[in-house]
Amino acid sequence: MPPAKNPPTMVWMRDRTTKTRPVVTEEKIVRTAIAIADAEGLDALSMRRLAAEMGTGTTSLYRHVASKDELFELMVDTIVGEEPLPEPGDDWRAELAQLARRQRAVMLLHPWLAQQAARHPTLGPNVIARADHYLGVVSRMTSDPTLATMVVDTINTHVLGVVSAELAELEVQRRTGMTEDEWRNWVGAYVRQVVESGRYPHFNRRVLEADDVDPATRFEFGLECLLTGIEAALRA
Image (cartoon, helix red, strand yellow):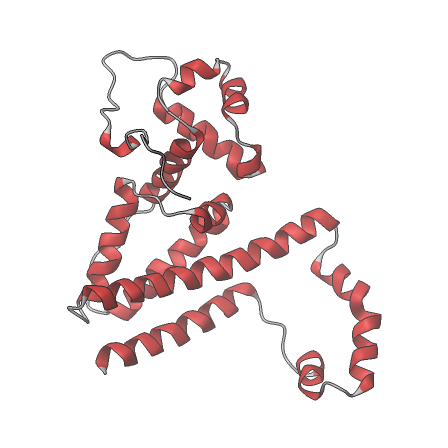
């Protein structure tokens, strides 16, 4: 979508300080919005709902936040800023793994983050600081900024993909009211028919012989594969 002819000034480029101590503040708005999104998701968040939750009118909100998109930017940057960046160490691979694990944990704690990350990137100071730290870790292995960026993007994509799959499974359980075991029982008769047909030998082995792997193990396996491949590529 092309940008508007006269887009508003980015929130990060405006003077957001106030000379007085108003009842409604940017911080209170953002914290209340995060609480709503954590409990009910982004779709439940509107300026009207936010105003009602805070016991004020929407006009007072717009004095601090110009739009819902701007509110999302502030929410993301606030959450990212709550997670302290690790101290630089000697093992770049361990540092990248630690950053990825923390990122996954934060996204699972605030499920709307994954949804917002899939929409468009945010450019708040905390988000940029985290990206700078990430790139700094990779730069110890390569001086090529393009390659370093691709490494960071690849890890971010892995985290977002795995978390999105985890959240989608939880959403299905919420929507259907069925647990994982209940779903397995529901599809069990059909799967038995498929297995007994003998038409899909590799699928049969997956059903009959493969272990059930929890999301954390799947995440770690994918992360380890990525880091091994990244290390090989950077040393080539």
